Image (cartoon, rainbow, N blue to C red; front, side):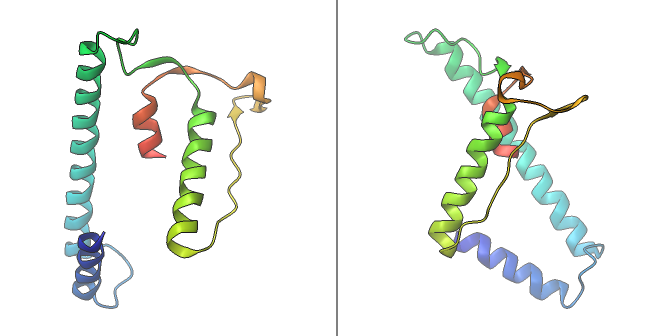
Length: 125
């Protein structure tokens, strides 16, 4: 945590009063952080798949869930954000999570499910 804070503090000092994020430093920092995130997600995905395939005590053979519940994952992510805000800031934001399809809002029992990797979706959200 302290390292991230120091990095952001240094980036802010180097940028000065600029708020456009189009200066060369901001563009380079954004590229570095984007590459870092993609590398981390890729490594986590490969390691998760390897562990799922080699765990003989479980019936799970893949990290891909063919019936991924995006609404449930988004709700878990919102709860985690609220928990972290309560811990670090002493305040909890109000978060509303809804599901929609091409025809509009959907009920709880109509939430579309699709094949995806829940851990990656949780991380991205």
